[in-house]
Length: 389
Image (cartoon, rainbow, N blue to C red; front, top):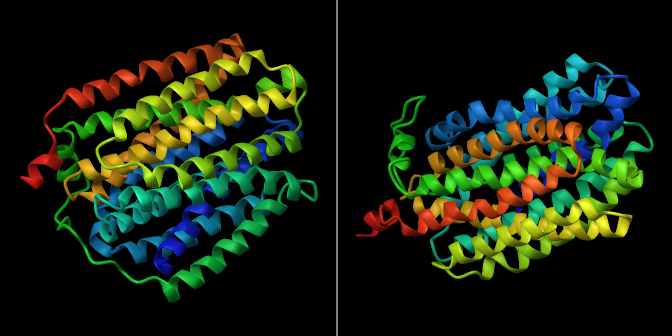
């Protein structure tokens, strides 16, 4: 395997490790410090809010200044966000500032990495490379909550201290090993509101951006409500929650690493529809939780569908972008983060009203999102087909 792919996988791994770290720790920090429980949703939302407003900018900058430079900048910024949390974990104000910084630079990393893959791959092998990225994301989710729960027993700040050190070491390695890829398309002539974005929204790829929002919206809902919901159901602890995400992370890893890279070009939409059905089944199972084992099984079912949909949709969006990889990555990441902005707040609010309806509503939305794929399939206005012609 190319060194660049291994390094890009490492970058994605640490981005999602960082996101996973906070899932079992954040509720404990908020409760221990006596902060209002709504800050759990607020701290998750502000991270995504920062990414949402800056992702298109990162996409343009990635095309202009190069993928490697942006990856290095992103790693330094992401490292700084963890260091702030470790040093000032008892300060609510600093927690919000650190989450904003983390959101800003995670957007830079995602955009640069996805653009890098677009430059170095073809339509035939892009599913394979996206599958590798999915493997790294899955590993991040495997070790993130588990590491957070384990190191959190020492101190709540310890997981973030360790992560900041590891990311800085990755920055040094990337600065030495990573080489700028050869561009497949000229995309440098853009403004802050990219012309490429307006072009993409004229074609059917816009439906994939909408679908991306829905997939992440549902995922954010589970991440923000699962611990609170299961505390009422089975009195779940942070360590137990870490164990659940550990097992679901292995499912994520196996689905994306073992399945996505084998999916043939042109069959993505059928697989995406199946993924949403599996996602809905997992969501509908959550209200019937009576044991830790059942909660873990439901989470694994949900993860299998969501992981497949998430990575495969990113690959298909890249193919439909007609060579505008950087812009497509920025827009896709913006839609993802819109889901992460609205998901925690919406589903946490629903949870406070009627807990069980959280997953009835989200399961129904998963099934309804299949209509977006039908509309995409029926549309003939494809930028990819025009480029090939």
